[in-house]
Image (tube, rainbow, N blue to C red; front, side, top):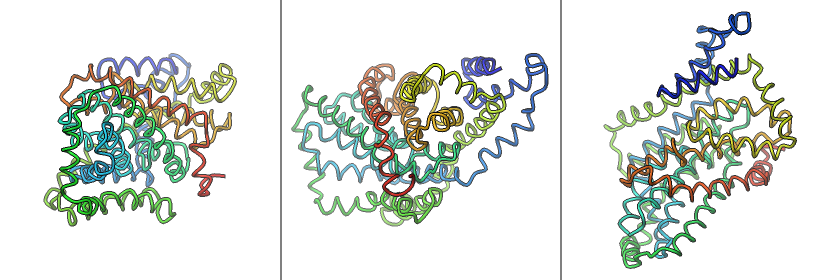
Length: 441
């Protein structure tokens, strides 16, 4: 029955149907075929699955996702990324690798505001890619770097991936937010090391770089810092509320919406009140796709449970891979391949409930550590073909063929993989801060 579900899912996917329809077709397969295969009826019919789907999205915890999406939309239109970028140009903008490093640093800050990969790629890319091309950097290098930097939004808190993983497995979202800080910085550091090495072997027009630096500095250091103050304060306010124990992640998400509104409408005045309805429509449009996948994914997860799929997979994995280390490596390889064809949200929805009981319940892997590994692994799919959503966004901005850009993505993908190996086999990278702050024992 499980194999039949996978066949149906793959067949519907190959004809080009949206991912939620693939999930829906797979979830109904046991109900329709059980009398012929199992010789008895299966309880998960249409009414049963509909109730499960509604329950799947009727969650206070998941309310954080549309709130962070809305805050990201407002800040994207409000030009927050440019103000953050200018600060880093002042700090490192005179060096050959300075502007690319400033792009990575901007992605870190902006990712800590939006919690998502695509919005961070679009916001930072629309501002940084034209600047890098104008300064003489290769289009493919600029686009691939922005795409990789955008992925930081899913590894650094407040990642929407952590919200979803926590809600599906019962893991503390606050602990995941705290745990994701060092892994996100680690992968960012590996990316910047790659940038430093890359820029040593290419010729860079230092005259243009100096002119760009002087144009920012001519506004005055104090003016640039003052203009960027409220933008740089955004992640401090949002994450400070969570880390300080003042709010839950959902409440912090609501605060992020109000903060973005106040800053962009009344302080920077880059967003007009009459534009708010348009921004709300944009946020709803983005979240609608996520919500419908969550709903259908909840149905599939419940059907898997009724079919005892976690136990079957657990028995197979434990008999095939004798240790948690080898099993984690196998899971990373499989999820990396799946992430090439499927978005992060469906991956987490389908595989988190399946793998969590095996790794955490049977092998004793820390739940927070596994959540970081799982999210970082599927985030790799944002920059790998053929799906590679971040790469498609960056390619459109850079006006370069996505096929050619994917060749350049090999280098940044290796950076992710190197960071992921450190995160996987040195658990303290993920668990040190949560233990220090008392989130886990």
